[in-house]
Length: 120
Image (cartoon, rainbow, N blue to C red; front, side, top):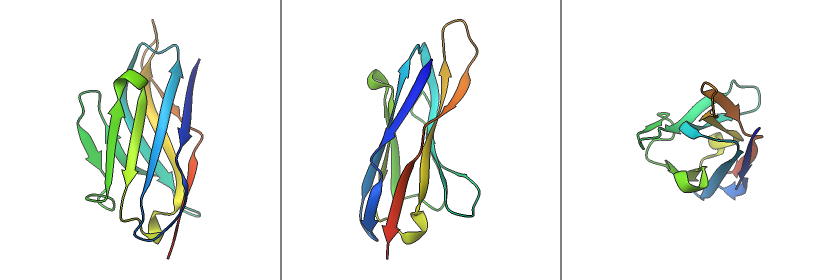
């Protein structure tokens, strides 16, 4: 079994900052790519940022220069530092990780989602 527990969401004014975290636990052999997606009301879920096992990062154009993704491999945790937040960043944020369990192929696991609300 694998569990992903996210935290760090909340309500913030425009221009403010939040830091999300998502910790994976369970029978994990290796974690490949970790990332964050978000879904705003009435919209499709979209990619926000990813970080590979080698530390290579990728960002949606809408968050480049404002958000920073990082990971702590010792803690099986991925972080998303969000600065200069805008009302349009309001969404439920989900972590997504690709995890390899012993004697199993890589599988994708979603976290439960954490609400981020940015007021104008």
